[in-house]
Image (cartoon, rainbow, N blue to C red; front, side):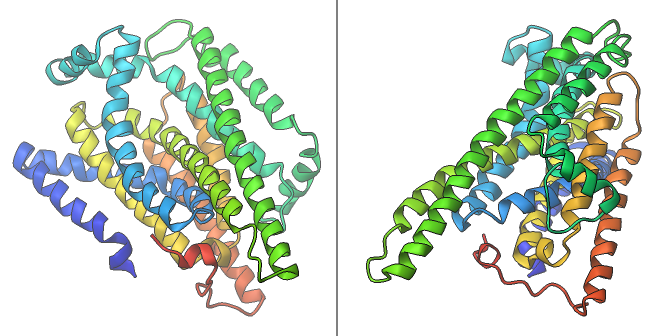
Length: 377
């Protein structure tokens, strides 16, 4: 099970480290290894969130997530994205931006760092909306009930999460964005514009995927009712399959935007270690492979069903990361702190889940066999 799930990650690690050693020697190999660990530590909570969404998809879309999705994650976000940011902010053509990244690495790093306020605002607002919608939703299981119970009651106001997110954005624009160290000057307008763009992206992609997911569930319920009344006719299955494809497509887009938001801090933080885009892409790409494998492992093992507070811990980590991203518009926060916050919150939620299982007399969790898990990838 472990080798089957993480086999490609192990293979990519060996090949990537060997390539780094050949191209850049022992120093390059060490840098790529450090970047891989950095990416894993920063994105561990991302794997839990991804698993919660991926388990709703069928086997085909799970495979798409592991193939097309990993290409987008490794080459798109870790290699192409920084170059695109430089091209936009410096008003350069794509080829000029690539040449700059290769021939003038200090200037390239400066331009990417200068774009950090816009990147942090966009990603921070997107992640903040994920956290707020989670905390305001009524759930069967409550981890920190003293927080989640009153929040669920307040969540009956449909637009509350949007209001809070906009207030947070305004506060960030009027405080940390007024005198930015990255690029210098007042970045209030940039932060506001990017933050609104992040909020709109969440509402559009998340809203559309949620709509099709609801339609899919309604169609499946109707199909089950139809089979119970007239099993010989077998009606309703085709509609459910068609809607599943649409729902899975938009959930796939939603997953990729989430991954992009999580990767922002990793890409920016990587410049503290190297400004070589190829070392960066290789190291962060190896880390991204492990996050993908960990996501699949969680789905196949049914971990989120067995340890019911894991999703809570991951969403609290998302909320913390959103706040950290907004704060880093002006202040530098060490990536070790960012990574530890997520790891600690997930570890605490896991331990709470273990204690709950023991209290209920089922200490040996890990035997879930839900349909979406057994479908595999």
